[in-house]
Image (cartoon, rainbow, N blue to C red; front, top):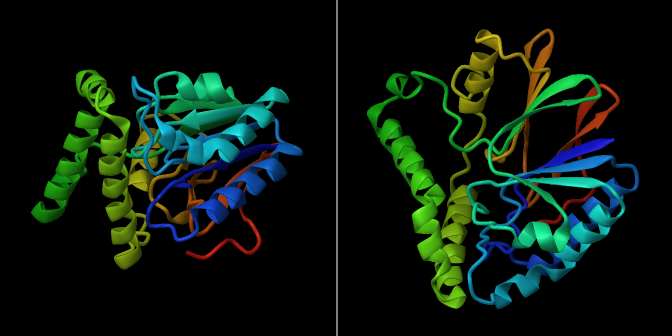
Length: 265
């Protein structure tokens, strides 16, 4: 059994019961580990994550979760950690402490004979997509792309890691909190097959001959399972901070699942 989940946003200051939230995710992973051959975490598992040059006491809040990751990987179960747009700044400590395998870019893999495209989903925009949008929306997407380039810039990452963790963390967690609160106040639902960026991206890959049986993304916080053609599907995983939805590959069968009684925030 192979599991896929994303967008837990652990540590978010917008979550009323962070300890309960973390324990719910731990219980979810421990249940998966009973029959898992691999677990894929597709980004934004942390609401903010940075590994500084100095000791960072804020990591102590994640000790139960990090311990669970180490327990699972110690059993020989691979956990693949894809960076998202909230937990970009991992530089080796997370891998060393937990045994996870970190991926910094989208990956094309084969599992049980099925070709699967995996990514968090941020920054994946189909060709000529922006030109078709109203200028106001174009501006917002260009701002996001610019910020993404800033956050991925090695020089700026190095300089940020030099900051005192207490100051830098407060900045990072507050920025991320505002993002969560905006989402709660103004959710962005599924835009439709002809407007949803990740659907259009996947369709473009198929048109280019880059066939995959499954495209699996996080990022959007919507649950979607859509047939692109008779032999290709896209799944957007929802999230693990409100919905607690995930995907499961059993043999060659992919399904979307939800845990019972997810916590409410």
